[in-house]
Length: 315
Image 1 (tube, one colour):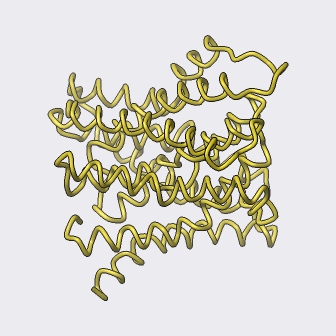
Image 2: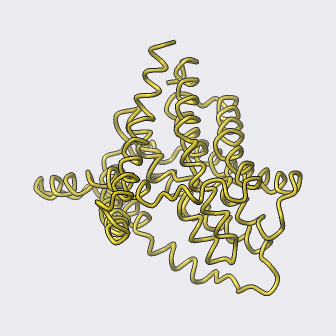
């Protein structure tokens, strides 16, 4: 059991120590907000799309079409939204905060934190996480649009479906995954020097993304609107990953599939949720508090969940 605990700490701690490094570097002015902004652009538009292209290009085509797994993931995400919606009424979340609360409870940082966790545990990303990402990007956006459409303060701006679809089609992650799938099907010859260049550039993705998360961290925003934040943290880090893993186990999934399910539902809230909340006239202060607090407490929840999965022989 002690070895399982050491393993769990070895998985989770390096990720959060890099995030902590980013926070410290920002606090001592070694890096500034302009660096964070440009690093995020580099990761989002170049490094991560190349990483996704390369990971998808190298995967087994048969693993792409696991319809049972991806149907389960999509259904579980939709169910988590329904449960969060119900909880928001049961615990009395203010109507003006409800949309932000629901989104913060289900929309996780699978891309940055999740990919890092999976690579630390399995040694490589594998075939399914990029495809899960391709599924969740549009699904998260559609669900967020629906959530805020039904939970917008009266008199606020309209939601633009057309603009959202345009943003989705031009998303660099979707483009990287799409080109990766084409490469799998067409198997074009790619020169070695090109592949090595991609390897060099994609290797920047994880450390830069984690440093940027840490550098963007603001402790003053932790715990604001404590009641709504606390319930969102409980949903995001405990309730939803527990229910998802239990449902996945009962459906017959095991090993890497259960790990992917846990990571998808158990990672901290995505920073994109703040942007979405502000765009949709949600509660920006609550969104920030949920992001910061889930990120802070996920170091403990992740370690405990990985320890539990390892102890049960799932990993």
